[in-house]
Image 1 (cartoon, rainbow, N blue to C red):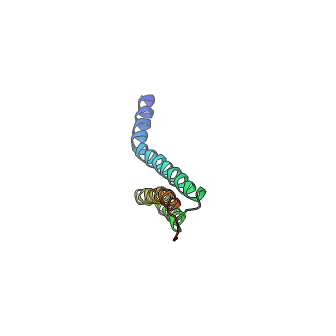
Image 2: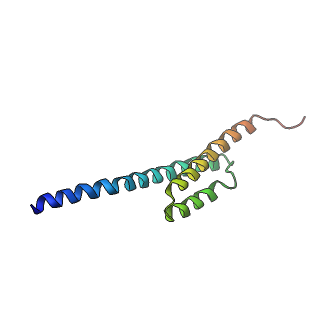
Length: 98
């Protein structure tokens, strides 16, 4: 009888906490992706001014329990890194005035 109760409690706990664990892992992936994207921009000397600020703001939001908003900011930061790399490539092809 006690074993069944313990098993049921474990199953219920797993069901309750699995969304939180999934959200935490998606947050960590978003942090990793955004950081890698910004690092690529930095490697070509084209890191945008506010990209790392978005990482810090996202961290504060996540700590306050606003993980969904934090992930949105991280995706924005990742996009900024990608756009910065594209801008660096585009600007490299531009020649100055003759």
